[in-house]
Figure 1 (cartoon, rainbow, N blue to C red):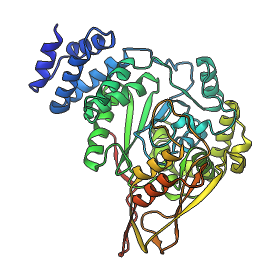
Figure 2 (tube, one colour):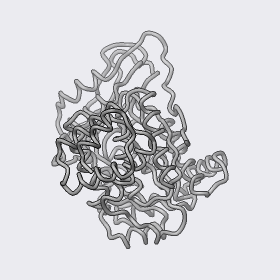
Figure 3 (cartoon, rainbow, N blue to C red):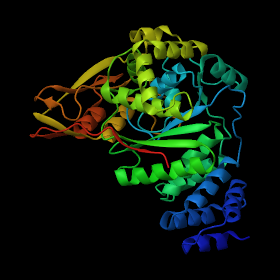
Figure 4 (cartoon, rainbow, N blue to C red):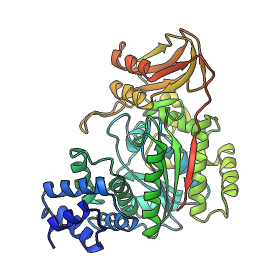
Length: 434
């Protein structure tokens, strides 16, 4: 088999055989197929697409290119969630304890952030002492005991995806939906969960800016999961403004803990309950969505979910007093209010600009070698639909620099106003099961 023939076939819009796809993934991972041929192949996929069968085979080949996590030592139906990324997305810290509070094991492999804010692991490390590196035996033991553990991903999960992603990034093929879907799902499938709930973001702060593109990606990923024997559901949620009111690392831990203690930040609470309800139904803990939702809401109110979160922090070596008393979390040196220069209803908040403003403060990484500052971040005071008077505070910047000019300017650029009343955006657009 020759790679040039595989490229030619896909360039002409023909469906590839399983063997041809496996030949490419294995050959490229081993270094037998050069970058220039892999680039041509991915560009052919970008223009011609792939059938659901092709995408499933591509994903499985990427899974098989490296290690897979054997979670058979964990008792019960293991369920995972994945977000395609957004600004202020601290849902994992709420959903994990919620699902675990229903007796469903959550064994989560997470990564670090590159871009707007830190990733799941970076945010957790705002809690002093919390360990995200542990042996496989310790990880499984923690899940069996406490129903929840979060750890760093092993270095050799889906190595084909790592190579392909790096190449896509420099060949203008990142946006190819089969390649995005295969990339995300290969890592999820290699991580060993029995079922997966996907939170696919749409809007200004999302990778997919339009609902149409987000739906196409969600359907592709659900098809992959179901084709490869994992029950998969996708929720398309709005990212036309940051989720909740806090953006950063310590601030997001603080806000997640507040939700688990019964505070009602409406969008964050609603989305967390939606995701957790679908996860517990997939795991068989409840017979239907309503039963799941009612029970999980009760577990927020009665403190059961918060107690799971506390136990998780203790089990992984964290200082639990930091979530009991958020004032003990890392604190920035300066708190700068950014005031509105006009009056009106907030019509738009460019979530990506808010994320970039947080990155300028040090909450995220511009390059993979940058150090995260856990203390800095942004607190939103006004969101879409709110009325603002001239001089009212839009956001508060938490900074280690008294005059963070770039962040201030970016925040001001993010807000758009209207003289007419503006409706709050729909939070959950669609739920896709097949």
